[in-house]
Amino acid sequence: MTDRELELFATEELIDELLRRTTFQGVIVHSQEEAKNQDWDGERTFSVRFNGNLETQEAGRLLEVVSRRLADPV
Image (cartoon, rainbow, N blue to C red):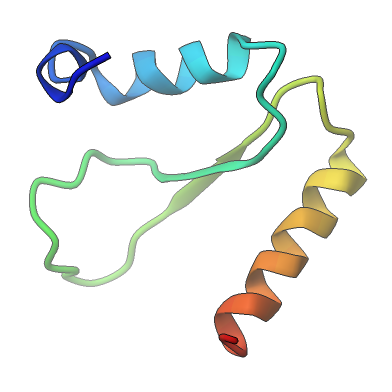
């Protein structure tokens, strides 16, 4: 799929498609509101989504590992 083809889909559609895939094993963190630019004004609310390939505890552990990596980059 090319960048041009991806432009035809809304963010929510792309997330839904990824979560439908049985091969996807991960967590999606996304802004609840579409970002129109990269400037952050005030506070943003994020959603965390994952599919049935992970249990809630597994998704939490994955996010914990990511958090540690971001805090202490190698």
